[in-house]
Image (tube, rainbow, N blue to C red):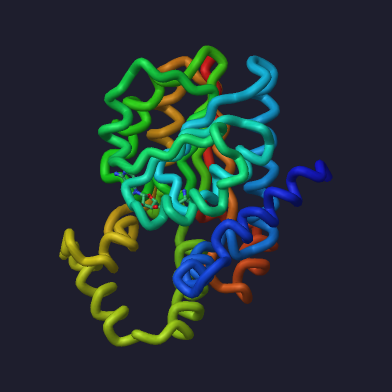
Length: 272
Ligand SMILES: C[S@@+](CC[C@H](N)C(=O)[O-])C[C@H]1O[C@@H](n2cnc3c(N)ncnc32)[C@H](O)[C@@H]1O
């Protein structure tokens, strides 16, 4: 295996595992928690980076919804220049500390990505959205806004979004729910959590509830992988959808993977 893949897999872990709040995030973030998913993520990061290097010696990366840097850090480590955009000052403060050794290779912008994307004068070789599309109500419109910022041969890379729920199939859907509840029940706050879940199941969503915002994707039908693929094909991009199984439960993760179930996906789309 390419040594860089294991380094990135390890970095994904380091980039979040620093204090109690981030340890909580890690516990609920399967793509960072499980070694197998970290490895998949690391291999895709390296693939996207190496392809960008076919065009430019130092790829320019735009990390939208950068959070604490689980994408920014590995791309910086590989030798890219990164612009990290996030609306949360506290997340970016942590990102800044973790990435301080990369100096001018990193630009941090604390703003809404919708504001950032209005500036169509900037150009990037890679646009990354990691564990982010499911937080954006109109993710297709957001992708369309971002694509003009890509250089020729540029790539759009997303990772860790839930496949459209109604495309999962009954068995996978059931297995995934059982896996989730087996993990959730160990987290406490069970009664309130259940109440929130039932409320959202009725379609009632409270915009300023931190829980509802954190779990916004729960109120919808996942992310539509087919709509995203078709968007890229219409824009003359080569598009690869990589799907995989993911759950918070360490017990169910290897079982779902062994059974070949798929619940989550990433996209690598390259401008022709
Ligand atoms: C689930 S986190 C993912 C963070 C990081 N990409 C990762 O994979 O660890 C989603 C991030 O998106 C940011 N975010 C959500 N909506 C945003 C918006 N409209 N503009 C900028 N950042 C946003 C949040 O502040 C949060 O840091």
